[in-house]
Image 1 (cartoon, rainbow, N blue to C red):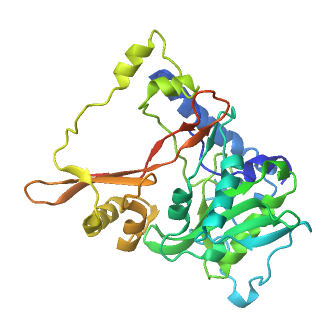
Image 2: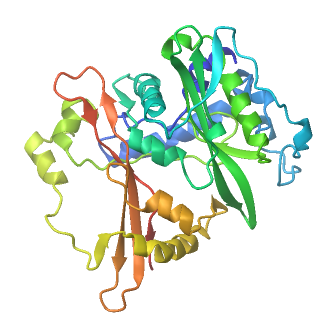
Image 3: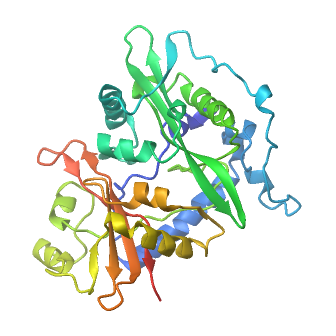
Length: 365
């Protein structure tokens, strides 16, 4: 795995700690910069020694138009799937993390809180709540065996974690059962132990045992090979706090009072019929969401059970709102966001930065 150790042992979305640009020109530069990073990564394939051995798209194949669409590797007969876990260094052991257990959930929470994704300047670190983890890791039909931990045999301390959850993904006109792999985290003191490649192989093995042969994951770095990228845009809600903790800064020729006034929100909602989603809205939201997702080449294939789990409001985790026509009572629009705070590292006055992430949204034209 050579010099990719830190990147591959701490995967996740880019933390929200990047200071946003002050004007449109800088925004344009940042997009160009992102494109350059992708291009540079294409020429650095030799740095991805681990991923070159895996059945994922490779940078060298990007221009090869002769490759047909479909699985990179054909499914293996289940009888030929490795039945025993991969070997760990002698001082460690595999465990299956029961996320229904309050004690286990607390162990996972503590590992992620102190060792998961940080921004480049080490100012912010994702702080997933136990409630968020329960929501993210226990969707309909989840497999407990895909919640994988590594313990130190002597201390029994949880030192590493990786997860998978099942997902039905539509690829063009085909529905493919997949695994979404997330929360790969290795304790900071063990990042030289080469645990990450073994953990990725182990979650892959357990996914194969369920006769599932495709997976998707996200990373804050360029790994072989992205099918899409995501650019973060920020809307400040409490600019004074964000500036105080170093998340953002005052714009040129701006004062704090002018900045606060600029970002002040209206006192009342302007959209008639805008309200919080309720359980009886699940069928209407499902129809709206499925119609919206049809436009994409790759998208989740949500049914009502999925919508109920992922989108019904859960305090401090996910919020969903819709627009219901006062005349016809038809649900015409939908928006949602999930809440993911970050720990503020090194601040004397603040400990937590609360952020809302845009989730699924549909506006009726």
